[in-house]
Image 1 (cartoon, rainbow over the protein chains, first blue to last red):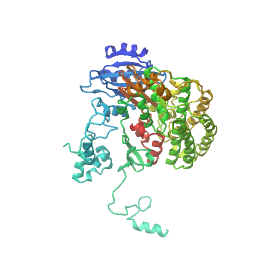
Image 2: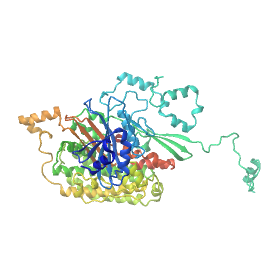
Image 3: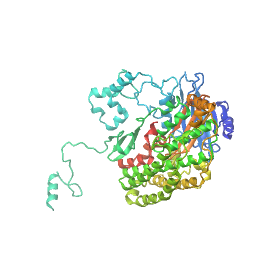
Image 4: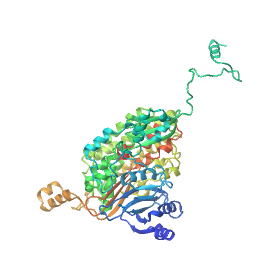
Length: 206
Length: 421
C-alpha cells in the first residue's frame, strides 16, 4: 500500500475513506467531497507525497443505480514515480458538486470542464465552468450519464429543427463580443438575438 | 527645403517645439484607433489550425492579448460508444482518435484491457507492439515536422518528411491492410503477424531514414528564419509545464525529463537502449529539436526491436480471449463454440479498473477502463494528450504576435480527432 495513504489518514482522519491496491499498480483512496481541496493541496505541496502532476480528472457512473458516481483524480509524483488515484463519491440522484482543483493545477481547467460537460458535475470555484466539447446551447443533458440514451435525448427531427433555428451569432459569447467593442453599436434586434443565444440557452427558451 | 517638406509644412497648421511640422489626421474626425482591441476569429476551417480548432483572438494591433479556444467540432462520443461495445470492438474506435498514430492507440488500449484482465502477452507480440509504437511515432512526428514547416513558410522539409512517412505507411499497409484504420491489436495479441518481406522492408527504412532526418536538421536547425520564428516563442517553464499537466515532447521541451517509456516502462522498454531528449528553454524551437531527436531515437529502437524479434506464438494461448484460427473453427466443435461465444458475448473482464499510460507521439495517452464484470466496460476514459496540451495555448500565446500564435499552435502538435474524441 502506498505510504501516502497512512499519512493522509493521520492528517485528515475520517475524511479519508477506504483505500485499495488496484491491479494496475495504482493505489486508490476515497476522500470526502467537502475536504477534497484541502486533501489535494496537501498531497500536492507536502514534501513527503509531493504529487505534483495531475494526470487526469474524470468521472465514472456505474450501471448499478445504487452506486455512487465517482469523480476520479489521477495524480503522479514525478520525482518518486508513483501514482495515486483519489476518488470522490457523489450521489447520482442528488446535487453533483465538488470543489474545483483548478486553483492548484491549471491543467485541471479543461478536464473539469469536460467532466461538467459530460456528467453535469459542478466544480465550485472553477474560473470558467462551461461546456467544452458540446456546444454551449446544447440542451439534451449530460451525454456520459447512464440515463442518457446512446442516440441522444431529442428525436432526430427535433435535433434538426434546433440546428436550423440555431443563431449564428451565438457562436460568440458575450465576453468575446465585448472585446470588439462593437456590441453597443449593433442594432437592438441583433443584440436581443445575441442575448438569447448566449451561454447554454436554447434560442426559443425565453 | 525640398519640395515635399514644404508641402508637408504647408499642410500642417504649424510647428512644434522641435521645429517639426505638427501632425494632423489626413481625414478630419478620424477616430483614434490606438488602444482599441480587435476580435479575430481563426477557424474552425483554417489550414493553420491543423483541423477544426477555432480560436477567438483578441488583438491589440498585432499583439495577442487573449486567446479563447473552442473545441468540440469533431466530437464523436467515442467514450459513450465504448460503453456499448465489447473490448475488441472498441479497438476500431481507437484508430480514429489520434488518427496520425493509429497503431500506437491500438496498443495503448490493448495494454489497458490486458491489465484489467490480467493477461500476459507473448514475447513476440511485445516486440511487434514496440515496432508498431515506434513506427507510429515516426509518422506522427513527420507529419508534425512537415506541417509546422509549412506554417512557418518552409516548404521543402514538408516534401521530405511526407516522402518518409509514405514509406512507413506502405509498411503499415502491408502489415495491417490500412493506412489509417489499422485496428492492429486484439486483447491478448495482434490482429495479424507481420507478412513476408516486412522485416526486410523496415530494415531498409531504418537504414536510409536517418539521412532524411540529417537533411531536415541541416535545412532547419541552423536556419536563421526558422530560428527567428521559433526561438523564444511560446515559452513555458518546467514548473508551468507540470502545472498545466503537459506531457510528451511539450513537457520534455520545457526541461522535465519525463518519458513513460523510461519512467513507468511498459512493453519492456526498459530493455532498449535509447535516450530521452530534453529541451532547455521550453519554446517552439526546443519542441522542434526534441521531436527531431525523438525520430532518431525511434529509429534506434526499431533497429533493436528488429534484431531481437523472437519467433514463437503471437497470441496468448487462451481460447476465451483469442479467437481460434478460422480453419480450426470450421472443423473442430470446441473451437467453433469458443469462436461463437467470443463473437456473440465478447471477452468478459473481471470487476475492477485499470489505467494504462503509454508514451504516444503527442504525449501520455491514458486508457482508463472500469469493468463491472460484463463484456462491455462501464467506463472507457481516454486521457487525451493533445487535448490537455492544447489547454495551455492561451497561456503560451499571450503577448506574442498573431503570426507567432500560428507557430505556437503548430508546436502543440494537436490532432482534433483526439482533442474532441
